[in-house]
Length: 294
Image 1 (cartoon, one colour):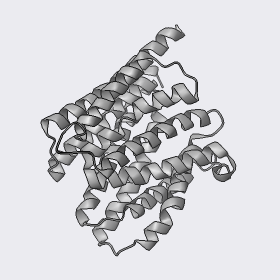
Image 2 (cartoon, rainbow, N blue to C red; image 1 turned 180 degrees about the vertical axis):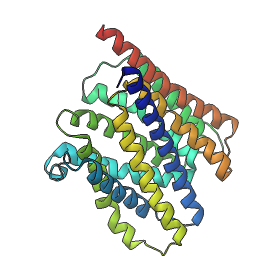
Image 3 (cartoon, rainbow, N blue to C red; image 1 turned 135 degrees about the vertical axis):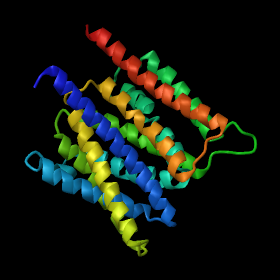
């Protein structure tokens, strides 16, 4: 296959990934319309379906014993499993757009963590993007308003972004020794370990439609992850990351269209600063890295 066709296929897979992740968040938001939705159960559904997809696609490469024998794999699994629950909880409580815009700041925090944990050079773009993202979070969560302050779910969304940043750095460390299937399986397996008992203890009967949506939640997450993983084989990190920036935009538009979510002017400015800060960090980091390599 020619380089042009390979690149087009990779872009198509990354677009499929972004669409799948967007659909995943909006489906979680839709489950919130059923009332007191069981977020523990949603996280379990994602973990169970993800493991099934890994076994179907990557069984020869998958190393299940590494899930508890390798400390870094275990760390990735626990942080990823907690991150799934926190992300889904904040989507239900805050709305799709608001939660995912805050979650998307993981791009900046991951770069800062990499400078600390991996001793990577802290580039000015990371500092600029970080300041923009922090101001954006402040505007989006009304931290500057005299009569309104961030709630517990706003703070949890920030915690979720930090967990995602930790996971990104850990994955980069693990790629030297582990197959992608094992790294992804760690998240799925530990999501089940963390969430299965609370899911059973808090279980309430669901209508058949809700069970169908739960299955779609797991499928869209699995398709999104596997498509993104495959696309990054042939796509530069900067280009792939920019395509993934469509996810917060898509979830915000979907939240407005399907669930009547609305942003005040200062909240739209905050969302724009978050999106601009994270995009600037990705683009400038990639440009600087390419220049240094030359």
